Image (tube, rainbow, N blue to C red):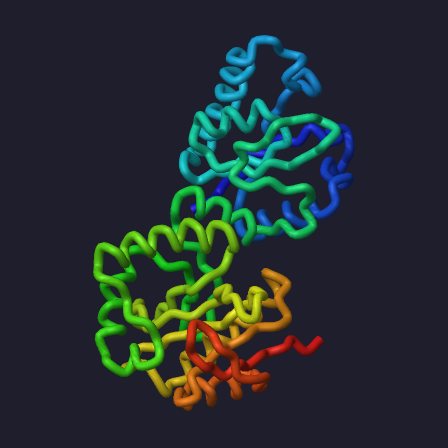
Length: 312
């Protein structure tokens, strides 16, 4: 669990009463971190003497930074529970060697090479506790929690979900309108690639739906990309296990996912492509506020195209 942020910013005015007031959005980030009980510790470097051109011995510089970071982490007993925010290349190199996740702040005037950062930002207006936690969780290959509802946890899939997923897919009605899962070994490799590429690159995908009451996987739902008529459309997908159908779980999950689409990926139009005979799915999307657009030919299938549009 993330409990410590090690902070180093060359742009900081250390003499100011509120030292980060010149960096837009940073004060809000600090307040959000503290609200979530994440401690902030500054990595004190004698600026600007830590710019690469000021210290010819790169290894010496790296060792000194590593020593300073080690001292902070050990004093807070926060190994594997910390993350670094920095705008310096030497701090980036130290974080990589120490295997600590790091968010790089790109300041063009500093001329730093921050390509090794786990996440690179050019400002902090859109950075909050949730953003930082996702960087931390992805570094340690932990599933990111997307949202909670009154009865569900919506989170990224993990390989351990596959046993329960196969149980859900075992019912013949599930694959009436959906493709079946692959054979076990192929599904494992597919899921690994999906977690790395879909979640890692886009920040969304199909997620696992966990019932809070039982801790059981009851289905999955989320957002995918689908090419239709030469354009990429954001598509809402969903699956609820037969034993959990007709209890409002799909509506509950999908409403939350539509909120996510607007808030997190600035998507105001979400689509569904449904077989005409899938009356339950059509009833669900209409309940969610989707409207019929037209029929579409996709992968040699004729599907009904429904679209949800965010109402400002």
